Image 1 (tube, rainbow, N blue to C red):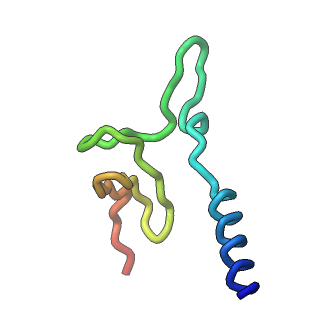
Image 2 (cartoon, rainbow, N blue to C red):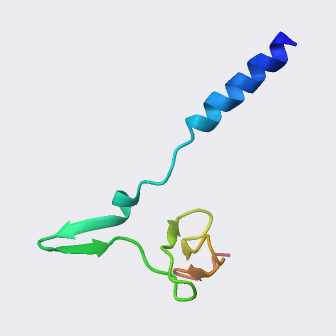
Length: 75
């Protein structure tokens, strides 16, 4: 019973320590203007993620839209 309570406490602490997205890392300040670093999704308008592996691509986590970059096939 003590071990079960210990695991519950560990799970609770892990949940509290979960890393959240830091919005300020999505923008850069240039002079008096604020500019978005990443692309916006043409479908839903949310910010897209840039992935390098296995293929370089821009991907939207909200609607699933994906743009592949440099679609050269290696054989």
